[in-house]
Image 1: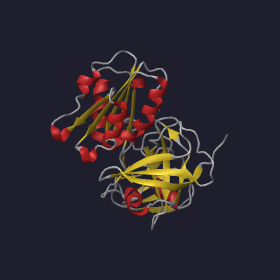
Image 2: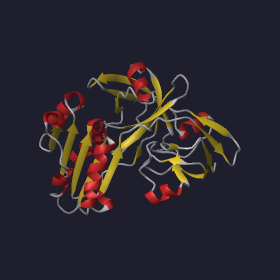
Image 3: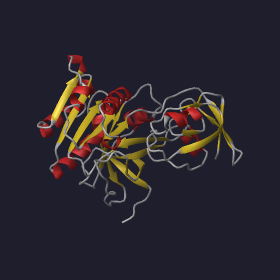
Image 4: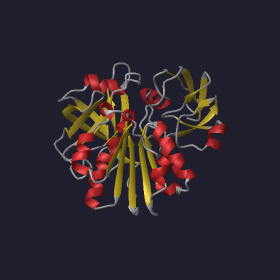
Length: 318
């Protein structure tokens, strides 16, 4: 059965999980079941906004085996670009939104002998769906959850109640921190590593894994970070001759969408490579995790979902 690229949903419930995190339950407006998804998938939620729409990706945290509803959790970011504030302050039960069909770039590897899951803060959300799948598979897995304190430990009690035999928690304010080298050095052959959370944790864990000789094919990661804000700049589209102003709080991708264009994109987080665009002129401020250092240094390609201009102007091959 095919499903539309955009799915109309109604907000069925809003729950405050911590002082900073709310969980939103979406149900289909047409009464049908929602599209199937695999654990690790995300959807893009479109919010109308006042000046422009917000389109934010959020991991599906509900069970892949329950398709009457989807659940996502959103951490409030007061210094962010507005999407999380919109969700926290303006979205209520009964509201209607559009979401994308689920996309998975953080899937469990089917041939892994063990699954080593490492989450930091709100990065726990994709693992909540994966834990449902791992339990059904009766897989060998460990869940390692690092957080600052209980105010930042979303779903800690739920995890303790349901997965205590597999759960290891690290509360840094109490002096308990995750040691990537110690953890990664003691894993059997065939283990796959999955990391989701802030940039510091992601880099510490993945860099350690590579230093210890883990195969790249066994390292999977997803970063929870909004595209950075910056100074405004101009984007010129060489093929169409159009010139657009990119606001400090907007991305190139969002600016193109607001102008009625439909660039290729999936993750909106600089990971998948779908929005890679040729740059003909200008200096790029790279913020992605997809392009190699060599490609970035060439100043010829950029991921328009997260990267910006260092110069006052970019000319794109669009």
